[in-house]
Length: 230
Image (cartoon, rainbow, N blue to C red; front, side, top):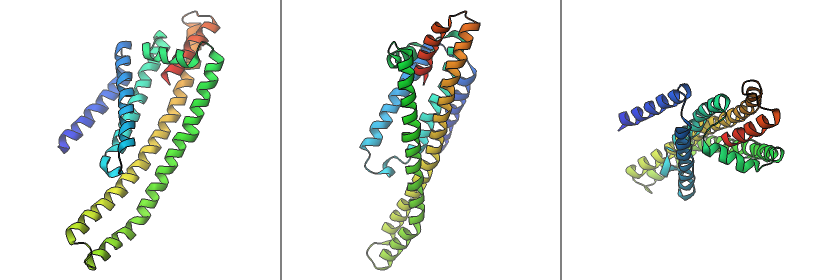
């Protein structure tokens, strides 16, 4: 089972690299975006209904994969936006929905959403994961001593003590992994902001110089595509 797990991860990373190198058709991009949105919703539902973190110990790995995939996809969509000023129906529709026919208002709303996501949600989640990992690691020796004390007092048998020790160790590993995963998520948020700026300013310049668009038309089109891509 472990070998299959490693093989699946290797294939995933190979596909991710290929997505960054090989240009993807807009239809394929739409399909991948739909899969990403569905996966994110499923992951959200799982995290809500799970009562104990140890019920899904692979959550940090899943979080890394679901964070890496949109980042890799952004490279492909950026290529489509800058080369063909078209990144598929989903990106254009979502960008048009957020902008709402008014570029200035749409960009202001998008900026507010981005600031809230980065400054409040991402940094807050990173801090929570960091503190949880620290408390879990600091409390690990005390929990181990408590288990040993209960076993000596006859409250629990050696088998129960072994299970409890394993549980404490898994909790510590889980919170440590979550701390690392949230740092990756923070980096992904920063990269996303940079990609939006590249799409917007680079797209406007390319639209004016290579596609002979008027400034207002280029700004309108690439604002919608940049917001939709983000």
